[in-house]
Image 1 (cartoon, one colour):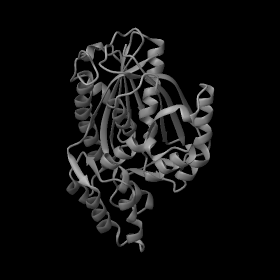
Image 2 (cartoon, rainbow, N blue to C red):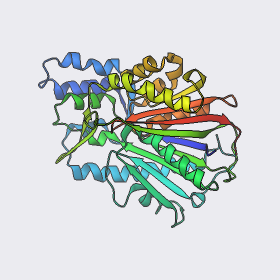
Image 3 (cartoon, one colour):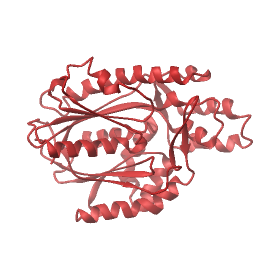
Image 4 (cartoon, rainbow, N blue to C red):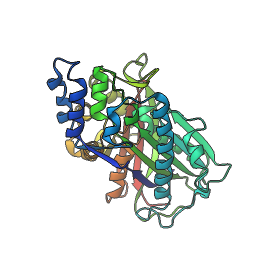
Length: 362
């Protein structure tokens, strides 16, 4: 089975404490909501302590055009992508020997927070020694489900080409989409949650010959699922000023009503139960989302402790977030044979599941 042999993350340089963003939101929204104090409780109750942004907080005090936002997205995404790929290929925590970019056969690039043609991975290839015949698979629009979906697509590639070494690169700069003049509650909630980050995973097929220093997770099976007629649950509205966030207040209820059957059916088809999953690698979309996971799947808070830690330290970075959670698990000492389940939900409304099992390195 294809195996995840290395993972790395990169945090943009501007660290903002949650109390700073709450004060910023208060000044911005106080004249638009009569119950602003009650609404701002989401900043305190969301279990986020700090976040990383591509730009300093002062940058958000002025209006910025879509052109300026997207210029910054392209520039920063390329810079952060170069850094996180380099860290992943030369990660002595996991790899016996560093790899060069010219050994990578394909790059899956995941993002939903900016637009670039040529896509970001093509621009990165001009800075790192990738071969010019490296396959490029940019995937846009999966939002918070994108990190897990990228793992799924890389798994399928490595099944087809067992000698392949494949990168999954996820970069999101959600903060650059912030709309100062959007007075919707969705924008207020997004202001309390979203952050920036980058993550990179190296996956190898059975015959790739990559040596690892510790037990690493193999991908056993994946599954995608779409909830019909749910386009208004989560996503972006594209307007003249840029991307405007869409959040339904019903997301936690939808998870409670929909996710349990999805997960239990997937595991049943693999002759497993949720009780046999030792490690739950959940995308922390927010506190209420994690609460819904726990309630629906009858999980202890211990099972979501890594997800809650990532949420607290980094906020919701959209697609890279679940890869940050996976990195936390991969730094732990695992027992051979332990099962893990990656779960992420995103626009569509959709879900992505990835069944993992820890075992010997290739």
